[in-house]
Length: 194
Image (cartoon, rainbow, N blue to C red; front, side):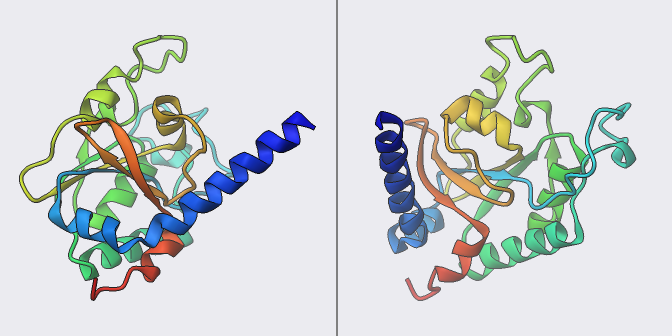
């Protein structure tokens, strides 16, 4: 019974957060800049995996974007442009799916291991410190930085729930807090007039 109550409370909280995603106040904040936009790559082919990759350049042996994921990344970039959200530096994890998402959405990407979360040793307690530093770095004046990354690093730093593919978390770098989450389907709900 206690598990059901906890699950119901969690779902209620998540529903409230989901409804807040197209909040005009959040859009106004994004237009002013000063945030870090943590973007999980768009839709991928889960029949592929990274177990045989020999390097980050070895895209043939990684889980890659689907055609749907490529369309989602282009659409995301078009929505951000339509809404007048200023973008500064775009960082991307060195995996092909994150670089491709960033390049399709924003036309550029600065490849960096910090966006992924450090060394591959998952038992290293400071593994995500470089990512935390990147998330806490203030963007240039009147701009928002972007980090194109993965679901696991976000979960490791901020906790549940996981970001869906293509979902973006809006991070306030000075307080190191998530002030909003925007799913792919939420972008259309933002009214350009606000």
